[in-house]
View 1: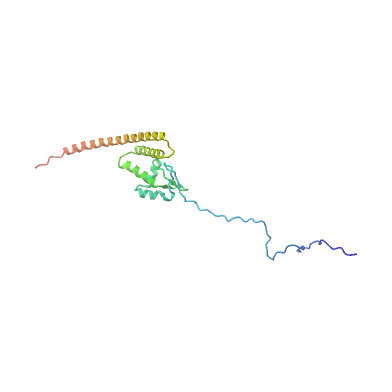
View 2: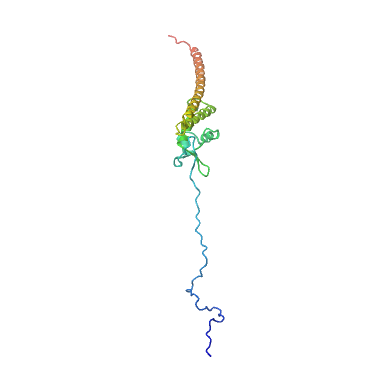
Length: 204
């Protein structure tokens, strides 16, 4: 009787390897499903300035904005003055950093120059300065809408009438200031005349 061929091996001894099993090089590690994650990167806090859209709808160029110290130096005013103008609503910085630092555009500097001009040259108080600036801001908005290709003829006429009314109102403000200055000058002239009358005549 011919011995039957064995088709299966008996129990595998500890440490033995079944026939046909793949052979790993010594020291090789068994492959496991990859759990590798992309290396984390730490992003530095952004210092990008967030520009504000101005009254004309155009945002200031962040690359050209100035810090409060540089803006104050350019204008010849204190940083405290710039903060005060913002506090009372006369000035809004065109941008801020994510950390809240104020940034000023050339348009902002021109506005501060206008404020100082109205105060120092024309003698307007802050309420009068506010009225003038509000008037001029509205005129700028009317001008932009007037020149828009989407503005019809009838609307342009309305804008012109509003602009005329605004400028007439501004003229009244200026007239009142001039009248006040004229009265002040007349009083000054009268005091000068009385003082000169007290001088003794020059003897010959």
